[in-house]
Amino acid sequence: MDDRTGHRTVPQTNLRSATRYGTRPTMKDVAARAGVGLKTVSRVVNGEPGVTPETERRVQEAIDALGFRRNDSARVLRKGRTASIGLVLEDLADPFYGPLSRSVEEVARAHGALLINGSSAEDPDREQELVLALCARRVDGLVVIPAGDDHRYLEPELKAGVATVFVDRPAGHIDADVVLSDNFGGARDGVAHLIAHGHRRIGFVGDMPRIHTAAERLRGYRAAMEDAGIPVADSWMSLGVTDPERVRRAAEEMLSGPDPVTAIFAGNNRVTVTVIRVLAEQTRRVALVGFDDIELADLLQPGVTVVAQDAAAIGRTAAERLFRQLDGTLVTPERIELPTRLITRGSGELPPAD
Image (tube, rainbow, N blue to C red; front, side):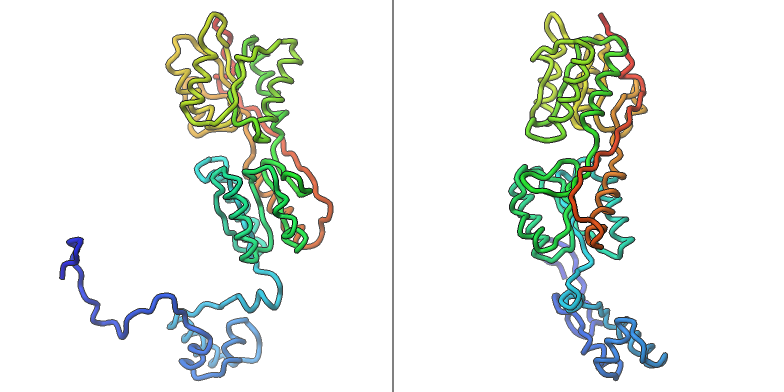
């Protein structure tokens, strides 16, 4: 027959009964099908001794036929642990978080734990809502890339024993472990690299100034310029949202006028991509160094010189520290900064055009 959408539907007459969604087979169902007691099913499900091979085979056949899955809720109540951790990301679309998330998951799997993740979409209220929702589901620990700067809402959860590690940015108004990159040192090295290739008018385009990473990278930029004795004009610095329109406008303003910049330091991967597009439209060659590596950076002409973070190492370090908290081997919160690496590919080695 045809439904209202015009799709052809064929009745499934060979089904014994209609599927009832939302209902799951229980150990009682398994016991009835296998012809054994509930305790016997429990022993098989939990890998306990005291069941003959033949009985275990019958129980396993019943489990397979019914599609039974163990309900861990009772085990949670007994042991107080869910064998699950939560990962709160800032922006799922940002490629930086791919290897970070994968590393956290690998460590969780090695510890027999399930990873549950979600995105705050850079919204502090959504971050809090998501974190507390994960806590309500009794996760054992949290790895959080913070969107907000006040995390006192987590104090009751920390006191209740929820292990927590912050990543990429420190927590606000609470003491907690944090794992991040050396944003200050990496930016300073990247700008110093441009200075070493003869540049004096260097622009900085970064993220929102309230964000820890953006502020630290701006501080690194200023430090490198100061070390070289180069005064910085206000028009050479622009911080704000990283949408392409804002970044394009900022870069174009720096590249225009009687004394345009001869080089740009891009504060993150999203900024770098937009700046590359702007520079492709310029008649003169402008040097570029970006913070964060980007896909295909080595295939562009010239290749893009970047200050690279090790996102996988950040995620792995954070997750390992989280499980050390859960094992009771860590007490005092620490700040762990991982080094960055300058990768030279050509764009940061261009000399000034004038």
